[in-house]
Every structure is written in structure tokens, then in C-alpha cells.
Length: 353
Length: 220
Image (cartoon, rainbow over all chains, first blue to last red; front, side, top):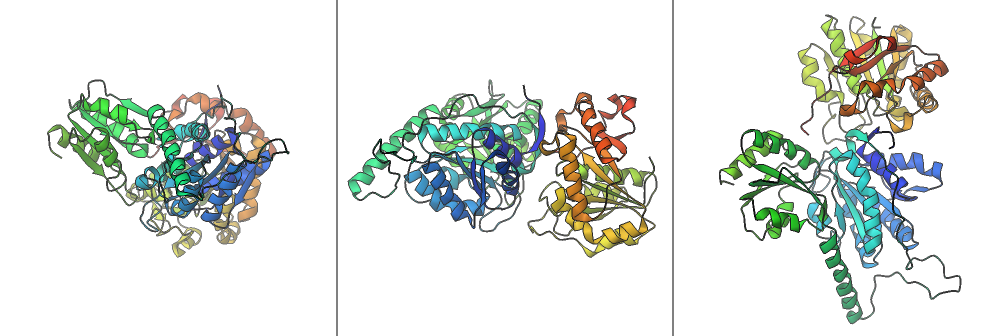
């Protein structure tokens, strides 16, 4: 077992990317994710990798497209406004079926917003963000250890399904320091027979492209891509249940909101309320199966988010509105306190909203 | 432990400078000393000395920090009141220097007054659990970068190896060989070992002076 070290979330995910074989990082600084770029700038030259501070976020995502097309493990990172700039490139990446890891250490929005933590890019991450019919794999860490672990997982999933993957963190996750154990990868990366690696006159050229000349062709591409999405939905839902065995009130929260909510669940239990929590780890695919199963035993759901209520839509859809779902939220960089979440759980237990 | 008029804490970012500076200022104030804490961090957006402002002021510590610290204004600003720390010679000053050489740049403009008065301790905070200071050589490199950036040489070392909530006495003790090498290579004395107040009493006496600290509580 490797020694534990104390790392900021941003540093941990950067080192985890290097350990996962990423040697191509293209970034642009923005608070609160700047440490990712700073760490990569220090480390990549020492290991023969490429750290490149692009002239803009748009340039950085397009560099990722290039490196990914060449079959390399490519990564970029930013925070909310920067991800909006990258969204065009992310759509092109999805249209080209290219795997890459895009990190969003969210801050408050909309617009320039603020530099404090937020989860208000949930819709942007899970509904596409850029134009066209596509999905990203979206992973939501809730500890510094998970910031590291999900990087390797994200690269693997992205390559397995030829999809871009987004690590959706928030400013708290990026800035907090916790002990972390960096683990060596176990499985070898997927083969990439589609990559642009040079034919050496031995095979037909590979073509990576998102432009279809015929509408029938584009429709076929979209349908084939969505067949792949169905497989992802079926096989890759991840969530963690906490005290759900006999729960009557189910709190649903991810990232930092789940850390706070877990304390609130314990407080509710101490007061005799049978509360539990489901923490989605994949936001797309959303853990519908776990939610649906919980609807069989719980009488109400509480969605806890650092936004005005975005994931709550997926909670309602997953349980097909069979139970009341209430919202407990703060925005603007504010984080709900355990007492606020407890109050929401108590209201739900009393049948109110 | 005898305090100089000015005590500065610098080191790699994440080494624990802010926690130590806050606790050190409170320790001075508890001895009845007129004390001020200067937050010179121009690097970190979150988790700053200003988080402890209420507690510090309740204990009588004057807190000098950017009006923009912990707000959405992401600018590396320092207030003009910071000069009070070098000019009010009747007040013990504790200065929390931002991470790395970039953070230490901000100290440069206060350095001439501090050096001229010559009643200061410039302490390097060493946490061997941080990834870029895992050995004495790396720590020494960061030490030299900070000195070059701010122009003030270090006068001592504070040992602060920890793993946050998962710290045990073993965590602290495992760093002793690297710490010993760092004191030898730098020629600087170990001033004290900082440790969470529940860990401090468990540490053996041979490691020298131990400074117990209270850490900020989080809601998660």
C-alpha cells in the first residue's frame, strides 16, 4: 500500500491523471481550478509529458481533440465560465466519438458569477452543454480520494465507449485538503484501432470527423451513438447508499452537498427519523435504478444541491414522480448547513415540502 | 518559547502556515501581548486566516487582511494597514505568507523594514505529507525559492507533518529523518513541532518543543 499524502483536490486529480497515463494536458487558468494547471506545469516536463497553457479555453479544448484523435490520453480542466467556452469543442468531440477527460471545478454563476463553490453546471454537464444530440459521461467526486480515483475511471470509461467524460467537481472539492492514497492503475487502456496514428501504407486511413454530407448518414450516426448510450445507461450507473436499509426519507445529494447531507442524515437518525441518502457518483448516466428501488420503500425524497434545483428533475424522472420530492438548496457560493438539510428532512418526514 | 517582535510563517502551499499563524497569534494574545495577524496570502482563494477573524478578534488579535479575502473579487490585493505590522513596534506581529515563491513575493515590500528592525523570526513550515516536499532536498529547494522571492532569509523551521483528520503520532514521527536532514542541510534550528491539540500530548519529549493547535471545524 502506498503512503498517504495530504493533497488539495486539484493536485490529487492532476497527479491521478499522470498516473493514469495522461501525458497531454491543455489548460487555461481560472479560479478555483488553477492548481490543476500549476501542478501539471511543474510535473509534465519532468516526465516527458506535454503541459501547454493555451491562449484560450477554446484553443485548449481543440488541442484536446487533436491529441485524443491521435489516440493519446488527453485532458483539459477549467471552471464554469471556461467550460461554457469549451462547449463548442466538447460537442465536436462527442460528434467525433473521441474520448478525453474534461474537468469542471464549478464556481457560482451565471455569467462571471463568483469564485466560490457551486453545482449549478449540472444541467450543462448532463444535458449536453454544447449543440446537438449527445451525452457526456459525468462523474461527481465527493472527497479528495475520489477526485483521484474517478480520474482513472473516467479515462477508462471514455475510451471504452468512445465518449468525452466530464469530472464535475466544485470549488470546495478542488481547494480542500485531505489524505489521499494514489493507486497504480490495474487495467491496460483500451485499444484504439480508430486513432490517427499513421497508416504506414498498411491499412486504409482512419477518418475522424463530425460532418456528414448526407442527412441519412448523420441520422444513422446519431442512432448508432444513442445505442451506445443505452448500453452505458444499462451498465455504468454508480451511486453510494448511506443508511438506506430501512430509510423512509431519502436524501439525494452529490459532491460536497453529499458530505454535508451525510451529517444531516445522522442528526435525523438521532432524532428518530428514518433518513438515508443516495449519493449519485455518475450524474450521467443518472443512477435511476437505485432511485427507483428507493421509491419502493421511501415516502419522500429531498434533493440537496448548490443550485436552484437541477438534479431534482432527474430524481423526479427516475421515480416517475411517484413520491413527493422537495428541494434544499443554496447558491452563489453558499453551502447548505447540516441544520438546513436536517430541517428539510424533518419537513419531508412530516409530509410537508 | 520566546517570541520575536515579528514572526513570519512561510513555506510550500498547503504546509499549514495559516493554521499555525492563527494559533500562534492566539497564543501570543493569551499571554497578554498586544498582537496583530497579517494575512499576506495573495494566492489562495479559499481557506484563509480571515476565516478565523471572529475568533481572533474576540481574543484581542487585530486582523489585517485584504478587504477582498473570501469574497468573489479575485485580485491579489493587500491593504495599506499592513504597514501597521512593521511600524507599530509595541505590537507583536504574526505574518501569514502565501504559498510558494509566488506568494512570498508580496512580502518583498515589507522586508526592508523587518530586516532593519532585526527582531524577527522567519519560519519555514515543513509538512512531509505534502507531495512536493516529501524529502529534505525538495523542501530545501522551495525554501531557497521563497528566500529569493521575498529577500528575507529563514531563521528557523517549524515541523508540521500531518494528514489532516487522519493524523496520528506516527504520522509526525515518520517525518523525523527528513526533518533532521533538512535542519542539517539548511543549518537552521527546529523551533517547534506543531500538532493538533489531541495529538500533541501523545508525542515523545525527545522531539523537542510541541505547539498544540486547534483546527477550524468544517460542516462536512
